Amino acid sequence: MYTNAAHHEIPSSATMNPIRWWVTCALGRGPLLRRADRVYAWGLVIGFAAMLAAVVPATAVGEIGYTARAKTIASEAATRHPVEAIATGDSTADPTQVESGSTSFLAHVRWTAADGAHDDYTKLEQPVKAGEPVRVWLDDAGKPTTPPLTDANARVDAMGTAVIVWLGLASLIGVGVAMLHMAVNRARDRKWELGLRALGYDVGGPATHRP
Image (cartoon, rainbow, N blue to C red):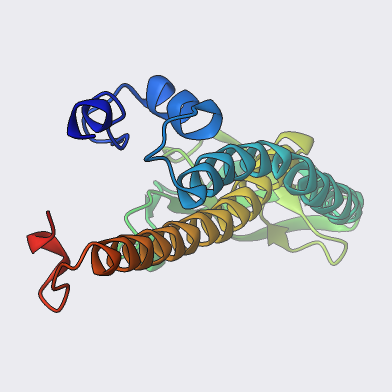
């Protein structure tokens, strides 16, 4: 009896090649294989397939976000227009951006519009010297504002949203697989206990002391 059992060891994912372990558990016929082993093996496949399938809803959410963001960007762009201005002095570092770690600059600029000359402070991405030409974006009220975002910004935001959604779904699937693993281990322990009791063993001790 012991000789036959030696040829049908319980598969272990820690000591066996993962593919061989899955084939043994899911498709094997060994007498020591439990139903719990098969359930867990197929549960892993279903979990992996679910993670791949989660790409579809995550992408759909990203597309919805892209459409909404693109409309917002288009609306903002319609209310902004560029003008050519001249820096009246050297730019200085923007003090409001020091703590955030980003680099931007403030410059006093002057430009001419249909209703006359204007001057104001504006934010720039690069430093400028007095007298240098500067492109300034104005809103409908004629006040300096930030440049409008582009379609590329909308796509980057959409990709970020899709990744976050997928990670959330993948985490839920991972939790489900982990719970299945715990349930399988409990079921396997109960089978061991019943089997050992039937053979007359005392199973009151820790599971690690079982033969």
